[in-house]
Image 1 (tube, chains in turn blue, orange):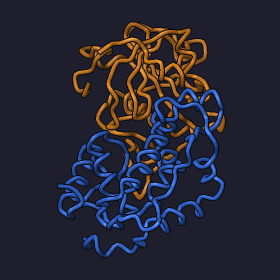
Image 2: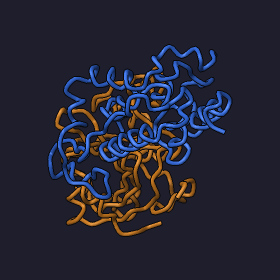
Image 3: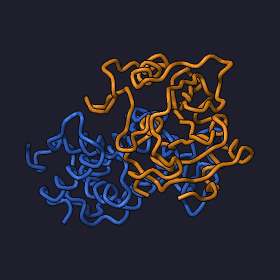
Length: 173
Length: 166
């Protein structure tokens, strides 16, 4: 297992994000389209059903301001945290009822979270701890690492393995 | 836990408003509908692997309806004839497999001893619904297959399983 400092991703958050946008093509537009009904700033499943298509946020997800101080461990960067939370809210509202993890992790918001790069790792680990969901693939793709797991390992075991990994790497306390 | 259906659930599955049902668990990402239908609330069952991981009880990971039928058959289920449909049969338990517009499976539900059905909604809640049609619609599509096997969980109270985290 290599140290997190060896992660080959570009540490420039904006560049990572733009890479994700470019990589997703039309998918990215979903996140940047004008508003559909929301409750409390979070696109609801109801909106999804009523519109018959993906929901989106009334304000574009947005990028951190140039020069915003976000280090590799994700410290600082309130705006990055807001972007992350909006993407999580969108992803949850549109996939929470699905069983096909292939669809769940290929959702544009999930892919954009991967595109945020290493600065998203502590945010993902916090989310994994507080509202467990299938964040393992995002963590693996971003970190290019994988805690010692086996195919038969359960969700709970994988969650604990990744949280332990985060503590050992200094992403969480 | 057995509460009225949450409005956000009815928003996604509007047929539930008419057919009725209950929320029977808290949110839980540990297991999904397929595992729940098979009576295993401890893992996520799906035939497609991501990065080489993902549990499926049989070697053949066919993501089509035939693959799901084969998996449930490995657990002792047999495909029902249409005439048997989703009616309650004393001494048997049934599962329903749903397919979306592309013909691929999206969901499974399990009949309880009182004839109602239980579904785990992805990462979300367990719910109880009176008929399999309750969760049909845009998200899960329609019921494609009903399967049954002799009842094996006599001690289980379907409304609240012992190993559930709620």
